[in-house]
Amino acid sequence: MSTVDAYARAAVRRSWWRDGLEASVYLVSAVGVALFIASGGLLVAQPLDAFYGVGRVAGIVAAVLVLAQITLISRAPVVERVLGHDSAAATHTRLGKVAFILMVIHVAIMMIASARYDGRSIFAQTAAFWDLGWFMVAAQSGFALFSIVVVTSLVAVRSRWRYERWHAVHLMVYLAILAVVPHQFLEGSTFRDGGAAWWFWAVLYALAVGSFVVFRVVRPLVLSRRHGLRVAQVTPHDDGSTSIVMTGRDLDRLGARPGQFLLWRFLDAQRWREAHPFSLSRAPEPDSLRITVKPSGDGSAALARVAVGTRVIAEGPLGVFSDVTRTAPGAVFVAAGIGITPLRAMLDTAEGPCALIWRVRSRAEAPLVAEVEELAERRGAGLILLEGARGTGWGTAAGESLAGLVPDVAGHDVYVCGPVDWADAVVADARAAGVPDDAIHRERFAW
Image (tube, rainbow, N blue to C red; front, side, top):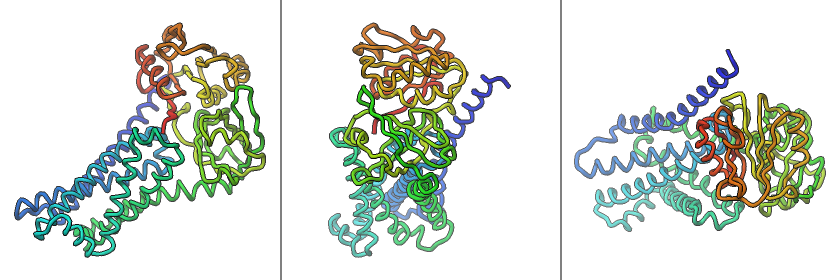
């Protein structure tokens, strides 16, 4: 089998896995609704019963979507390998919007229908729900927490907040889930009597929450103990960036690939509460990993002062921005500014013909520029350094295009890393040049 055929087969397999993972969410939702119907949930004696049933179905599907959200951000290896961290996070956000709409529908219908059944006002019905037990009070509190998280996730609000503050508020979603779950098992008639429905939901919750606990809490602690990562070297560069080398034991067992990133938590008094994503800036070695950071916020700026010897917890590797997504033997790497770091790492081990296009305001502001030039020459990779003010496209005022710089770009994979708007322009140019969508890969910096 030729190299081209091998890349094509791998791309087809990834596509099947992606489609299968998304289809599983719909399948699980259908099973949940089917169990509800089997329990007699859609027996209709009057029009109000049908209305009430719709509300319960909305709640069932919302619960499935919330559990899917938890799984998507659990950093489970199967999700990372199939979707990649960026796509998983984007899908998590998309499902969250639908889940919240369904929650609103569920709460509204339950409130209205129950009030009609009992001949009460909406306000009196709210108080009556509280009389049912603590779990209904908890459920209403959980819905309020979900509402706060959704509002603060809106772009108009999020853009005005620092990441750290937004992330702290976003953690309330876990409290919301804990508050909502009991009412499903203690009040929902589908679950009170046990049976297949009870076990179905118990298994779903166990898998989703268990995945989150194992891969977000337990695994990082285990890896920290196994590898003993510590800061070994902090090197400031003339362009304002800083390279941090961390050493440890058996780091090849992490399975990190050039281009991927990890979430780094530096365990000193100032930084231990926060984990930040940074790509590897050179190919991982059995006893060391390196990142290169340029100040873009309080967290990244403070890393220039991290002390040698500081212990580090690293979560990952994350993402599929690496050679595992290759669809063709050749590659074109396109970077802007500090976006060079994952591409510089990929250049260490890239197979086949490759070219590197690097957009910078000036050579003096280009991170690791001498190192990148030396590596490109040694690898035989074409390096195109585009210096100057940005023009109307993604390049300079000269109006460069991918097809103009690399005439056969349509037959290559294109890896793009840089600010969101700039990367959007590069992706649009790649598509215009005939590069297939599955051959365009990007690393998103947005949150």
